[in-house]
Length: 390
Image 1 (tube, rainbow, N blue to C red):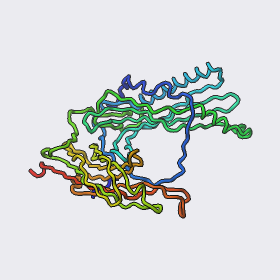
Image 2: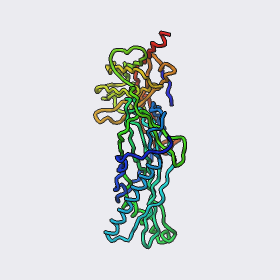
Image 3: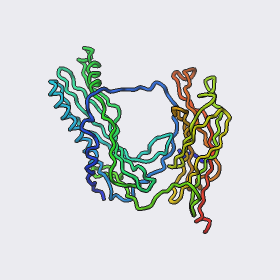
Image 4: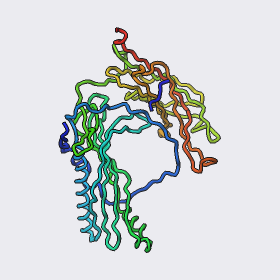
């Protein structure tokens, strides 16, 4: 069984990115706050399999440039909002609070049902002061992450993607007089009901990439950099085995296990499901399968053949989705390192079902449980004829 593996001068940003965050991203509306009341067990996600960090800093974006774009956009939005308030005859005014930012860092996505990869996150907080006559000011704070990724890096010709991802806004402020008059919450709720956080915005640059990383320095000259394609590719093919080094993954069988909880069979006695698999970035999907507990189905998914240059690890992901709505979706994964020959051989991967355990002795709230429900059998064949020739 495979083991689980849990120049320093910044160049100007291309003009196409400068309009990435539209001036209307701070338009008025309402804030929706959602509170989770059900605790859950942490479910692991597959380990990231790329892209590597940059080797050369010739292609880069200065962090200060990205922060400057956010600041300018917010200032323009505040100016526009004040014009609108004035035209409406309102005496309320808004102003920018000094923007805060922190050094960018490299982090991995946290998907459970698809391959994970590294990207760069640049966290900022946009602050807006709301001046309300005859009441204390309110401050609106919006966490805004600038995420930079090299999407499609595994093809040897990825693209740089910049995303502005806002978090939930918070409203602060007020004073003791408002408490005495019991109007603090009313004023705060009024501000909330007339404001909406900015939507996520994405811009794809014309630059091609095979890597992404962040400079080690955290001063005003820090930057995000990537390497351009050098002509090499990371091919994934199907068909006859290629010469020299190859990695072949074959999905052979799917078995439905016994999965009972809460006094009965989890989900349905007979399930119509779809199997989805990933072998690194090679994606396959079955037709609809009808299965009862104990049933075994022989699979006819295409074999996945990977040829040089191979990645440092093999991550296999399996998803089971209930049809016809593809919900719920249950997932499992396994990973093996190249240094261990990708754990060549036959493997079984269990996919767990998720279910709610009602509140009871030992836990006062419902919790999410996970139970093995499907078992996928697959084989890994790693061949390195270069080694055999030595």
